[in-house]
Length: 336
Image (tube, rainbow, N blue to C red; front, side, top):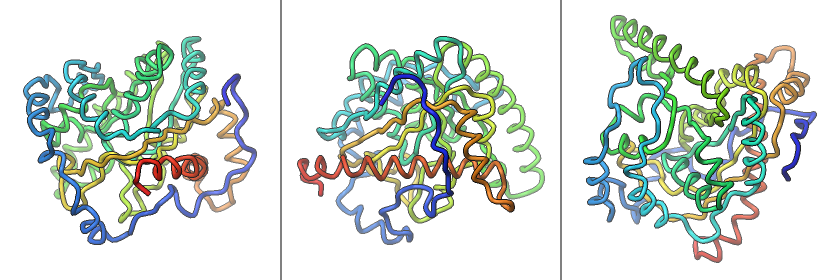
C-alpha cells in the first residue's frame, strides 16, 4: 500500500449496513453492558479533567468570526495521559504511508481530504496519539490535519470544549441543529446563524486546503449510534467535497475507547480500554472515485446519496478487513 494515487474501484453498491454494526439496536440493551464502565465525568481522571476545564480558553459560542479554531496545546499532556491509559497494546495506524503520501500531495497545493468513520469523541485524540507516536512523518501528518466539527462540541459543555479545543478544526452548523428548533422564530434564528457560520467555514476551508492542510471530515456528520441506524448513513453533502477536492483517503476505525451513553450527554460517555486500529486506504483521486461511483447508480437513485453510499461501502469493507487483524490483538489483551 502507498506510492502513487490509485484508481477507485470500478464498482460500488450501497451497503446493506453503512458501517459494521456489532451492537444491539435498542439503547436499553446497551445499559447493562455498561454496568462495569465509568462515566468520563466521574472517572479516575475527574481531577485531571477539572484542570483541563480551568485551562480552557476555547470559544463556547461559535460565530462566523470564530469558525477557524487553531488547536490549543495547553491541555494536550493531560489529554495524552487519558488516551494512553485507554489505548491497549497493538493499537496502530494501518497504512500510515498512505497518509504520508496524501500529505506530500497536499504540499503541492492539491486539495486533500480524509474521510473517516466516527464512533466516539476519542476518535480524534486517539488518532493524534498514534500519529505523533509514529515518528517525524506521523507528526507532520498530525500537524497538517484540520478537522471539520459541529458547533455542539464547543457549546454543549465545558468538559467537551476542554477536549475539543486541543485539536485544530473548522466549525460548521449542522442541519440537524436547525431541525431541533421547536418554534418558527427559533428556527428562523437558527437558519440565519447556520448560513452565516457555514459560509465563513467554507471560506476558511478553501484557504486551508491551499496551504497544504489535510481536511478531515466524518461522512456521517455524527457519531454512529447502534440503536439508530440512520447515524451510519453518509450525508449527501460529502458529494460536494468530492467535487472540489483533488485527492483523498478513507479511514476505517476499529475499536472504541469512549462508548456512547444512550441516556446521557457527551461528558457522560463511558471510558473503555480497547485496541484501536485506524486503517487507511491508498490515495484516491476524488474525480475518479466519483466517476466510478456514478457509473453504478440506478436510474431512480439520488446521485449525491449514491456517491456517499459508495464512500460508506468502501469504509465498511475496510472496517471488516481490519477487524480480522484486530481480533488476535484483542485476544492477546484479554478482551475477546
